[in-house]
Amino acid sequence: MTCIRPMSAPTHNGAFTLLIDADDTLWENNIYFERVIARFFEDFPGHAPAALRRTLDDVEREIVLSHGYGLIAFEHALVRTWERLSGSLPEPAREAEVRALARSVNQHPMELLPGVPETLAYLAARHSLILMSKGDPGEQSAKLDRSGLRHHFSAVEIVPEKDPGAYRDTLARHKLAAFSTWMIGNSPKSDVNPALAAGLNAVFVPHDMTWVLEHEHVNPPQAEPPRLLVLERFAELQDHF
Image 1 (spheres, rainbow, N blue to C red):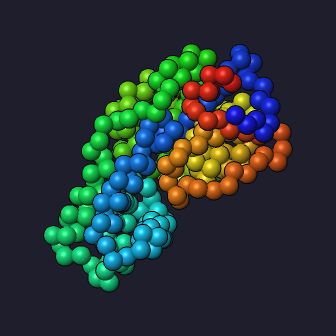
Image 2: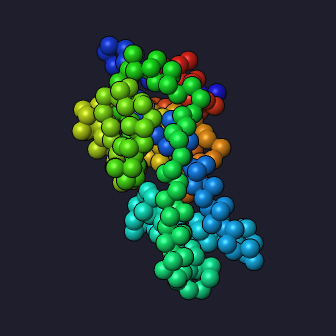
């Protein structure tokens, strides 16, 4: 564990507000996309793996701007990647197969990450927990229901993008103080850096399979507050909160 700043003071009753990410923080997510991508790339045996990945990553960066996040965006990304790699749009039957392959990401059992249920139960007894995720509201809400974890959270925030403005809006909507609010997640780009920029504290819990578009250097806090904790496992939150 790395502590870049000491913990901030909690609210008057000793409680913090903990904003907690969902995908790849509470449950596995990106591994299922990666399995589908590996299957998709099998249809392009003449291409170098690095070139295939570079093309898909470039397409996904474009798709995020036009379609946001979620399975529909992933479908569009695979179809557009097919077009770029093959030089033409897929035939209707093949396009339907590609889209079905993309949707198969959602056809897996919910796999909670180690220590998540007991850690959420521990935290919820001591602090106010708000799930804060980004993407398609219907998809994210359905995942939360499937996880069986919804009862731990006093509120759910599903936003199109996690940027400093989204964090400030959440603070205002729930009448929260930045100094006693922490964002917890696996993404430097979405969970850590923008939360710190908005004046919140943050806990970075890395995941080996974090989506490449979420990769970013963690920016150390420039002032006190905000503060940053870097933990190896979600369960370690019990040692600090």
